[in-house]
Image 1: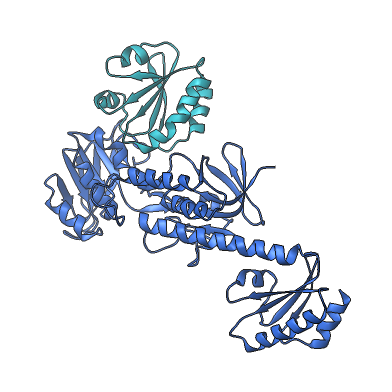
Image 2: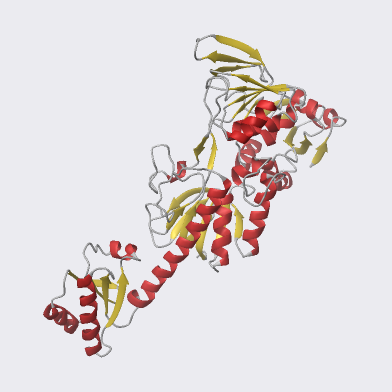
Length: 406
Length: 104
């Protein structure tokens, strides 16, 4: 039987690496399963200037390598493995790797990230790697002294266009908006407008990429006039947003219509013990800093879950004596009364029965599992099995009958 | 793995007999570097079936473009001097191995 990890993180981008730092530093047995080299999309971003504390001159690959080293320094194992299937519902989660290996974990953080969106226009797929690119750092130096087109006008598009000007002769940015309107941050827009190598085509979209073996030209449509013009170019870089890499998670955790993983503020997914972090999560801002933040929250939430689950198992499920589990909340007066009655009765039983109190305000998971909808409630456990349930204010006689029957 | 340059490309690849695999890569290409250790493992495993070469496209840009390679990572397969197959961008090491088995 394989060893069971406390925490397995799927994906080694900034979200996964940050979760690794927090998980292994809390002494959880932690592993990251990562398809290739760690770092995610950030590792393909050359200039990374907005991670606080790391200013101009910081590169994506260098920051990601530092994060990976950091996680490993606390004991995180980074395993090269592509996860192809998962079973998340049980107490022990099972992850199947492409290598055929099986990994077991008590908690899982899903941090699969996102990938560049393709527009699926004519010629885009066929000329991929033949002039069509989604990764400036990978391919920019092919275009020394050549002309390229950039599609998009968000942060990534404008910043990567600037990086491309270090190599290409001209970089033409095709923008769907009116002249002067860009979706990117103001600082980057100003720099781009001042860059003599950058040319702009406004109110326009790409309709086709042409070329025999390599990109030769693009067809550009003006959306105001409907006019289509052909422009010669050697390369086309697409930066038109991203899509989450959550294909294998369909039917496993709740996703939204676009395929992003739905979580709450604790990064909990729809499955107990399973968390999500980073760009694949439904959220407002997808940056390295927010991915790292998600990872930290998810790892701390996973650690708390483990402590609660193991505590419950130890105190209730594996107890020699029968256990009364009282679900209460400090703000519910009746539940405080019920708890003090229980404490009295359990003391009278002189060790024949134990009492465990669960504050449902702090731990909703266990309450939910046993179908507790009303406070106070008591569930009676014997040898790990729920033997009976009292819902609402306690009837002393019924309770005593139950205790005596155990 | 044979390291290719513009000087030896013709002799090692285009004039070579049998199956030749060329891994086009560069220092700046993170996905390429992520693949590299597994490519080396494949080169060991299949050493009797194909010749394994790598080409750092930095400094050999024109050569890469002449082979219609304008994006990384790219892995091209040549047989008797002709390019017979190619894997471009989103492929995994398992895809490379499958291709080798298909062609060898």
